[in-house]
Amino acid sequence: MRLARRAPWLLELVLRRFSRAAAKDPEQLARKLAGGVPPADASVLEDPALWAVHEQATAEILGQPRAFAAEIGLLARPWGVDPADVRVPARFWSGSHDTRHPTSQACRLAAMMAGEPQVHVVADAAAFGLMSIYPQALRFVIAR
Image (cartoon, rainbow, N blue to C red):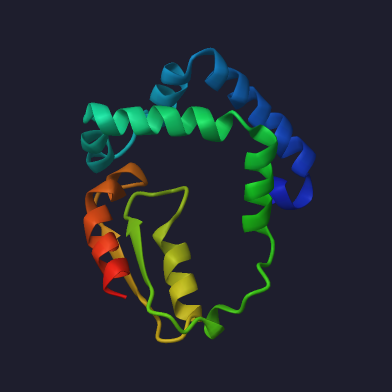
């Protein structure tokens, strides 16, 4: 996030390295990115269909370093929306071991929103481990 705010050109340069790796061998890069994940995530990635989603998403996301850098830049700057003005039902799901999208961020955003939406923490999970709660999250969305 710091690079996106202070030196977006440098962020893009760093992401180009990953882009070349993704183009050369997307499976190897996907394995590298999945290395050292918590048990809940490792369990999810044992499913061949979900592994294929991870591998394809890795290649697609990192295949466009300029676009990825621009997206990170959008997240790093003010959005122009006051979270306190959000009036629709909302919930957050976060993995207890997610260092890229830490639970503290979800809690901070929830506290700024009207009604302080619930933050559900999925034990022993990071990003991939959240796939186990997708049905629950989709039921919440459909019910609204």
